[in-house]
Image (cartoon, rainbow, N blue to C red):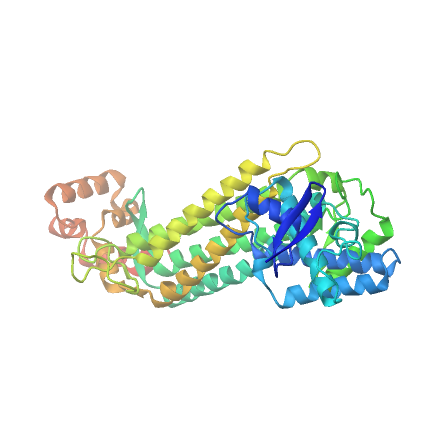
Length: 458
C-alpha cells in the first residue's frame, strides 16, 4: 500500500504508514548508503523547528490552531521515537538539505495525523511554509550540529572526570612506591608509580580546562542567518524569541553569533573541537602504551604492574593473558584521530557563503564522541580499577638499574660512574655489585646514596 504526494519535481509514491514525504523518498533513492543519520541531530532539529513555530505563532504569523498542532506533533516525536520515519543516510545531498526536509515532512504529517487530517494535506500544514518557516537548511543544520556537539562534549567530560579520579586514586595509593624511570626506552633515574599516575591525571585534566573554551564557541549559533547569513525572511523580533524558546527547552544559554555570516561560512569551531578530540586521543594512546609496557612480561618484560585479566590472550599458548582493553583503547583512539582528520578536511571545503559538507562533519564528530565514551568506560572499569603494583620487584630492578647510577655523580664524578656502569654492562652484573666488589664506597655510604628518599631527591 502506498500514498501519493507531490513536490516541485512531481508526484512520488510513499509507503503506507510512513510520515515522511516526497523529498525524503527521493533522497532515499539517491543516497542508498549503509548507515543512518544519527538520531541526536534529528531530535535537535525537531526542537529547533518547535522553537520557530512557537515564536511565529506568538507573533500571529501562524494561526494558533496550526501552531499548537505542530508543537504537539514535535513533542510527540521527541517522546515516542519511530526511527522508520527518519531513514536517511549520513552521506546525502550537501548541507543536510535532505535531513532538514525529512524532519519538516515528518512533523507536518504528524501534526496532520493528530488533527485527524489526511497525510500530505499540505494546503493545511506545509513542511515548507509552516514547519520550516523563517529557516534554511543552511542555518538549522550547522546550529543543530553545534547543539548536539555541545551536549556530547559535556557528557564525554564526565567520563574523563571518572578516569582522572581513578588515576588520582592510584597516585595517592602508590605515592611512595619507587620504580625505574625511563627515557628513550632506556633506564633513567627513579620515579614513583604515584608520580606517573598523577602525570596521567593532570594531562587528562588539562583537556577539561580546554573544553570550557570550546563549549563557549559551540554555544554561538547561526540560527537566524537563513540562507546566506543575512537573515532574509526572518523578522528580528522573531529571532530573539526563537533563542528564548530553545534555551527554555534545553535550560541552556545558546546565543546568536555576532557575525552570522561568518559562522555560516566557516566551520572553524568544528575544527577546534576535532583537534581537541584528536589531541585527547593522542594522550590516551601514550597512556595506554605506557601501561602496556609496564605490564609486559610477566617473565621477559618489565612486569611492574599487573592488569586485570579480561579474557584469554592466545588460541595456542595456554595461560597467556594480553592487555586487551588497552589494545582496544589504542585502536579506538587511532580511529578517532582519523575521524578528526575527516572533519579537518571537510572543513577546508567551504565555498563562498556556506560549507556544504556539514553532514560528514557531524557524523565524524559524533562517532568520535561515541567511541571515546565507550573507550573511557572500559578503560576505567576494566583496567584502571583493578591494576596491581609489583612494587617490591620494581624496587629491586631499580637498585640494579644503570639509570640509578647517576646518584654517584656528586660523590665520585660522572667519568668514574660511567666507567663503573660500562664495566658492569660488559660483565653483565649489577653495577651495585661491582661498586661493592671494588670497595669504592662503604656499605653505609651506598645505603645512604641509594635510599628511597635520596633517589627521589627529597
